[in-house]
Length: 193
Image 1: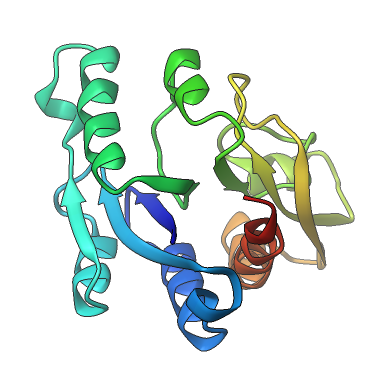
Image 2: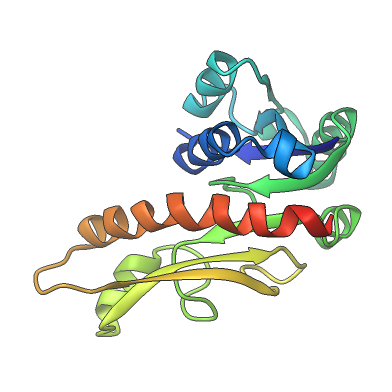
């Protein structure tokens, strides 16, 4: 079985979209794959409650409890490895990972970013797109590499920037597309794992 572990830091709406797609489309039968765990760097993350409701393992590795980034990542890696992930999926996981951690899961780690990469890596993507006068915005699913918000692009979705858009209204419209393309990109990748 190809185990999928999802990392979240907050409410986990992308994680929930992935879990629902895996159930609806029966990834277990179709690809020999299943979401087995959700892990957060924040013990109070809402996504953990959703994971528990779905019968998934839900664990927290609080980054604030570790003296260094490396110590946190050692603990996080130990939790991930217990679940033997074929795929590690970052879904709103708001921690920058070190190159050595990324290398540990090289080729098996995905992220979604709320811009049309390579445009606007990092934070505040929607505000930056508005300030740049973009007519379109969107989201990108990509493989994780040591370089932030970089790596082979697996899927993108485009949304128009509408007159009067704010960062919040644009973010909401992009998020609806994230919920569609992230499960689709994972499903397309599963047969190759």
